[in-house]
Image (cartoon, rainbow, N blue to C red):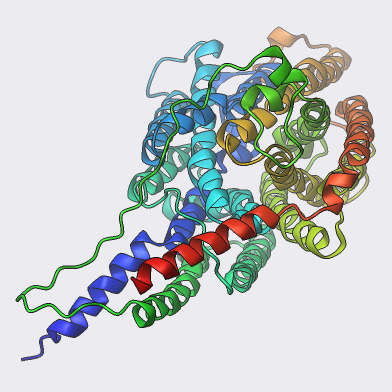
Length: 573
């Protein structure tokens, strides 16, 4: 008595299996993995702890920041690995790297081990940050291949959740550990790794099928993500003025997690419709056995082991495919289009990363209190999200409706970043708030545009490798602009301050500069570099103008229709 009827329980079991094996649940798992893959954007929050506990000067801290950016952007290995191994293996490797790298940093900062050499700390943070590429390759690339006609919207959402990761993790660490920045490093170590382990077998490539409600579902997810971002922004601003209790932090973290899981309800409703339509078209056969078998959908990931085949000189340099067709890895990397993208990425992401990494010290140099500096970092994270969402959805809508090229939007975004950089170079009361918003927005907007442009110009066959190669210029720009330009210029101003006080470098443990002059010269240089990147991307606009006037999604619609026809034919047999 009270037991569920066998037919009903069997149907629930079938539906559960259908959901777990479906594209939408795979996308939900990708959302969560990407929401935990933004630990690199929190460097401005915990970098002060590293600097003070290990006694680093700004140049050394910027060196750590460079290796963080190097690890976060050199994803060629993860891309090549994804070409020949299943997605679950890529995610497992990333989880292990994330935990090892950040856990060793936490051990060093809290003094559990002897103070490591600088090169060892660089290796730790590079290892931990590099795990982000494995999450990107496993979740983002797979999702784009599963939903190729909505890649702009999809990349905007996925990278948007990564942009929110900093604000989400800040709320979680305040709820779990209290206001202890060193514990934030510990949270960064175990939480993203745990998420990847939980969903490791859920994310995989599937056959593309036509889905009429696809765009509507993405807009539902967009609305949920915007509500989450606005909630986090309001909480961040309130925390700056009101002293929160631990219970209040637990409450805000709970609401943030509930909003993060809300897309699952949207996906369940969508999968229920798909499940019902499938049963109408192909009703289940009645079995006379006591325990009717549950149909299991098996999806096999086909990895072409000949992906990296050798090409002749003519194939690489002369006989290249048309834009939009599948380029080989060498054909794409050695093309003029990729070279221009490389220059634009060097200038755009290089300057933005430099600003992000120095945000904590910028606030300190201008006399802002610690709580306000944390607000800058959270605001930058939230507007990073809005930039990603905007560039993903708006560029997709403009492209489909007006044939507005994504390359032109890249140019406009780089011009916008110049304004934010100049606001730091010439600060006034409250200017860092505005600069945090502008730099966060423009930084976030660049990534979905870069990843979408690469997929459109060079095809999806080798996208795992190409999208990781596309951001290689970012750590190079960060090294030159952050380590070789910004750090030394800051330290030079700090030494001038010490000289005025009659002190030398050996007189203080931590080298600190206070005043408007600390970052002025460096950020004037950064703004000039960003403007040069905008001019470079304008060249790509001219080169790809004809391509973007065409129907770039035509072949994907034809593939989806062919798959649908094949499935209908199979069901009718």
